[in-house]
Length: 119
Length: 145
Image 1 (tube, rainbow over the protein chains, first blue to last red):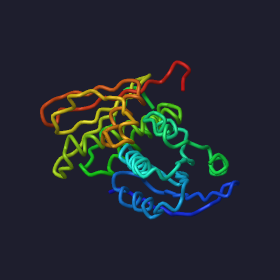
Image 2: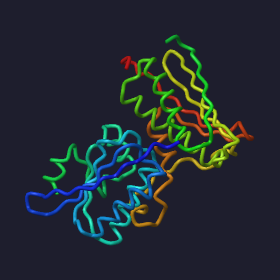
Image 3: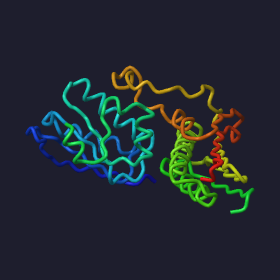
């Protein structure tokens, strides 16, 4: 009885002209979301040096969902391919992501414009 | 809400139903006057406790239920999450994000750590089937949050 996850992909460009892929999540992020989220990440196929994860539409995320983000960071580290940023987390989940240390590998930004400006 | 209120919920051992316990705990905490951020802490802790009970305690066995018992006093809300497993032997450890990102340990295994970090008390009790439980407590602070 897990609510559906949705992932959409879009692109933007930094001031310096670098392309940034944005994966926008909505719904719930839990163990059931793994194939969809990692599939969306794999579909980027090394075409973006910078990836932003947009959590504005996420209603619920649990530790299994956080583990999927860690899996993404693991894969990025192995391929040496992406710089990650995260925006749209509620203050509570900013705290949770910081507790588990994700902010060491993916900077947490207040919003999309701050994230794109910093990349 | 009067002090000493008691609510009990029984969840199927199916992932997703932790949200029912989470919503119930949030409603009770709201009635008691907890702040929004403390309610968010409680929601995550209760959800993680229920996920552990569903996945590890009851092994996703749909013939077993997870019990959630919420009890309030004047200054605290206690939540017990009860399953049919043998209980947790090891206390939570701090996740090592470096080892996780390097693939030296699995990406999961953060639930107990989050529970412990988000509530005022967290205890894991081992027992016979139907008697193992985790007990969580959040307290109203003296500023009357």
